[in-house]
Length: 428
Image 1 (tube, one colour):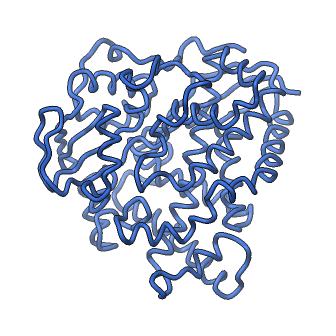
Image 2 (image 1 turned 90 degrees about the horizontal axis):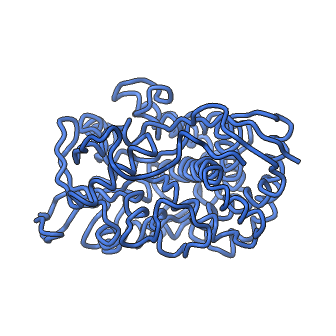
């Protein structure tokens, strides 16, 4: 294997030796580059771990970069709420969402809800994502892993690993669980990239506030048809469960249904795609770990979760304090917003030994890539299964791989990952 000589994900001093500012967490270019993002978090952990951030385009907030603080806030879900602000978005877009949907979050998905509604809504699909239910999908995930590795072999000796493989493999799985046809793949991929890549010039629909609303409307229009169909023609799929779900004995309302479909179809594949793409890059840059996983495939889920720690596709969530508290000498007031930066937590040297080293034998229970507390990712077991099955299929067949161009990252502060990674390889 040939490790990248120019894109190693090393954290340390800021690029070009400059100091960072807390507001740099809102800079999609800095956050859309692996090296600068982790250098920024190293700087903030050392110099300003509880930072007050002001920016003309955003409402002010506290920014946390240390593991213990992020885990604490994430675990106390009744003291630190997901509403009314769940992610960092420009104030103008918040106002547009408020006018269109009645909340500053727009469509209210699971990540935006608090108790008791959150628990009631989560219960609707909980059985589908329990470990025993996910294990029943293993044969299907293994078969699709073979299909996509075979596709790589047929495309060889070169492909864009992200665009041709990593983006499409998890998408096919989640659409299969939902019961949606393969013809929907291009639509779901386009809408997901436009939603999560709204700050990236090459992915955004348009550089305007209305573009984000248009993406949500298109998602809603598509799933409205799915809901109507599954009510008339129920099947054994997750779409039928969502279309016919009841909350407190009453049918789930239309906006909640649309939101549930959107978060399942988008987050259900995009973050896993980022983990597979970033994981492949990390393995090429840590050839000893690639060989370890090839020789010890039983590392399996443990190795997959280390890859997910390494990539940490969900960059942040926001919580709102319900009471005053003092944290590392800073006074946080009731009503203040607090951003939790998961990549920063997952590279905190106070918690992880050699945090900037991929270590597939690392204890997977410590990392926070799936969040913490009652909002811990519902699809975490599916994501780990997909990553483990894919690499279990790929690595024994992969003879060599090297980059043919510099990998490109999505410019994003919420959900991030690789946008492109051209490679040359030899496969059995």
